[in-house]
Amino acid sequence: MGITKLKSGKFVLIYGTEWEGERDTASVVSDEEALFAVLKSGHDELLDQPKYARLKALSDKMDGEEE
View: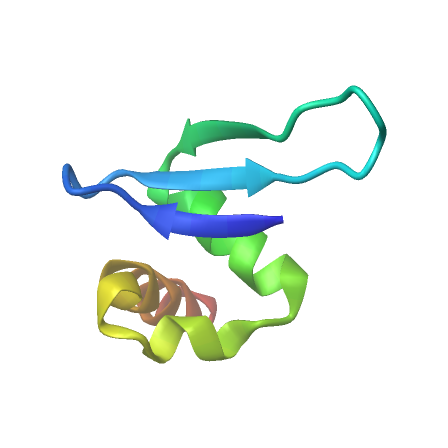
């Protein structure tokens, strides 16, 4: 799975497949869904990239609410 950010600021999750005859798919998701996908993938370092700053802020906010 991959993630990207559109010029509009929306996040898109990209689902790849290696099945013959099948196509990759993508879907526009909420900030929360995008954040959970990044965290679930174990690639938290993505949150340090400028284009994912909004997700980093959301993550920090959620961490603060847990305390």
